[in-house]
Image (cartoon, rainbow, N blue to C red; front, side, top):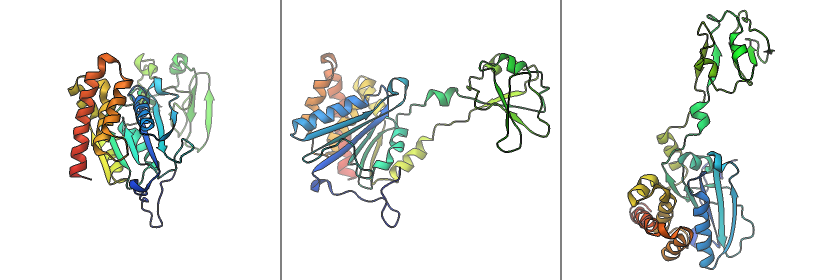
Length: 299
């Protein structure tokens, strides 16, 4: 999806907040980091302030470490829950790469509160791409016999030419081979050392982006970006699970949307267990202090 650009290719600035009748907030992160709970707290706070509230969520893979997005709109005249690209007032990211994924909703005036928390997908850590060193391979077929999918694709140097072999492997003359679609990347053939000539090699095809590079891209999108380690602050407050409340406290301190500190703090207490009220209040206050400092020194 394209960014909202003006005629010169620059990000279009949003309408000033004080003139808006409706407000758009987006909470993003990874399943299990409190994204939806934070969005619910914001929504209930907006209801208590007398606004209409609309929400929508994307969290089908949340229990498997997948992306979670919670759209929140509140105001006087809104109808639907979805927002227009480039019209986002606040982005709260509980995982830094998820902020990067949703920059298409932002503009130069969007307030972005981003935690440096990085959750590397298991597929990046475990998936391997395999290739066969044809200078070592003698075509014995031992790898095929031990392959769990029991399929090995050979790719010759001719573009788009593939041959599926279900029997013993054979060398490709003047070509090369590598495991393709049927390979799951489990690398069990290497773990079990099924090749007597060590012809099978594995390498990581996917990499998680560098944190500094992601920070640079995020800051180039908006002039109002606060990047902080919410997990560390939550631990200092007493419980890492309060990282989402830390970020809500930051939002309250910056005060870019019309939700009062008192209402937000009260709503947080409504959504947490009684035994966790004290630690969540500490987390909220720590975030509140950071938000106020950011507002005074940056905004």
